[in-house]
Amino acid sequence: MKLRSQYQLRLLHSDITTGEGMDFSIFQYHFMQNAILAGLLGGITCSVVGVFVVTMHLSFIGVCIAHAAFAGALLGLWLGFNPLIGALLFSLASAAIIGPVADRGELNPDTSIGIVFSLMLGLAFLFMGLMPGARTEALNLFWGSILTVTQQDIIFLAAITGAIVGLVFVFYKEIQAVICHREVALAVGIPATVVFYGLLFSTGVTITASLQSIGGLLIYCLILNPAAAAYQLTYSLKKMLLIAVAFGVISCWAGLAASYLLDIPSGAAIVITSAIIFGLATAFSPKRKVKGWQQTQLAG
Image (cartoon, rainbow, N blue to C red):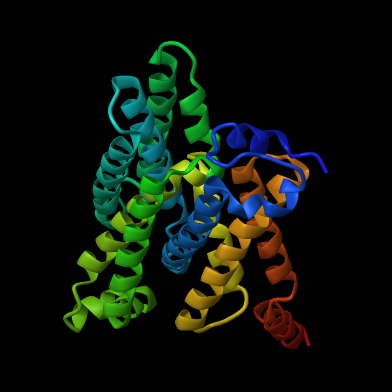
């Protein structure tokens, strides 16, 4: 079996000599090992944050932050500094702006967030247009390539994953209270606003950490789809987190395998796999069956 083109390109930069039968030993290559680790860590982090985005109905906010991170990364490429720094600054800044807007803006929150979103989208294409020469690195950030993540990317992603999982473990009860009823949580002394902003900032950091592997255009799909699929299968927040993490990791690894077998972009394959998982979860959702039974009872 012939090696797929994008894998051949990575093997040209590999420190291991190619040979016969290497289709069956692809896992010995460092770029593949990094991709598998990135899929594990990215699947965990995106899915954990995604559960909070889904349960708190913050989908459009997350889309806005994702595009802000992409714009910041492009600014870094244009001006010649680390794109991850630009992505982090822009994502955190957008979270700081849209947090108060979502809380108490004079306009409808969706309208205000839409304005911020359009600004970030415009800045992204502006920065890309101003970049001199070839835009290969910008396109890599746009589509993502889990095959190009470096050891430094893995370390950064591992640190973010550990921090977010640790914070969720420590403040699980407070987060659960805010998700269930923010006003009640605030009334009983829980710093609901701090928790809310913390979730927004966590979304921004997660998007930044996963930008290289998944891409600015697709990253939010990986945040949303596994969590939305888990939401179809359980009412328990704790079970939802575990199921979402499993779906996220499966999406990354199965998408990586599909990209190798079918010679398709890895980021797109990961997102399509997560969408298929969501479709299957919805088709077999016990919630859908309960809702159908309730509607039958009301009609009767």
